[in-house]
Image 1: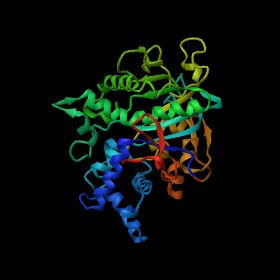
Image 2: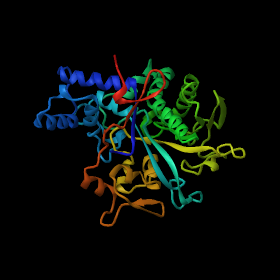
Image 3: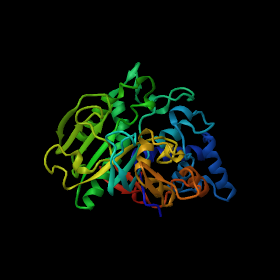
Image 4: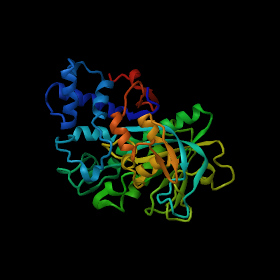
Length: 375
């Protein structure tokens, strides 16, 4: 059984079930990659109408590539994935407990780079940001269509999209920290504010800032075990702080005077004595719609939030089941492999669905998929 959890909202689950029904009735054609998965199923004697929701989610997640840069590779017209598939994949997150070997500074030769000796514990929350642009995409992306209206980005629609993606993640942080007798310190970058933003790059930080505050305002009763949400928009926005229903919400630009890397020890984020002494670290990772967690680090590249996080932690072990070793800013594969892509390719690594799917229900609780009723 995998040691990570797959997180999604009940709205995303409904979209998944609806899409399966559309395939069954032949009202829509699957993308090429999902078609290959369903063809294999049929050859094995199983019809798609007999597939459970959990099994169908497995089929869809199995279409993910080891490495895929959504903003430059995805076409989205069915020759790889179709629009329905990409919309669902974008709304799915993965949570995993890891060892953290350094503080997540992008360049290992930068002055701020610091190795953790011994390693610290943290939970990574891989979540795709809104994909608003694709070099090869045929037409507007699904995320763009969901938030764009009357010639501009609609804040309300954008906030709704962010809620679908981040509420399951924040619920998971709050509930798992509580189970350990602690509170959650959540740090997150500007997901979807970089290459994903296309012509809106440099302008999305404030949209995300407002969406995060709205998310905390609207879910007072369900996020009581989060001590702080620390948003790093890099160079966008202004440093800012407010208390939202007991949760410290902080905007701390990476380039600002209070800027910190995203994988520090908990006490390094303190701005008053011992304010996070009972906290455990959760880091939201800017993930891609169609890759495995870690993405570019499978090729050995410590760049992008995804790749840096994978290089600085043992998330590769969590995904592949193979132990590596950390050396000078890189969690290295075992002897005989130059990169983790070689390991993942040999083992045919993929995200596995096996009683590890948690759904954010309408009442603000996290529920196992098997216990959810959509009636």
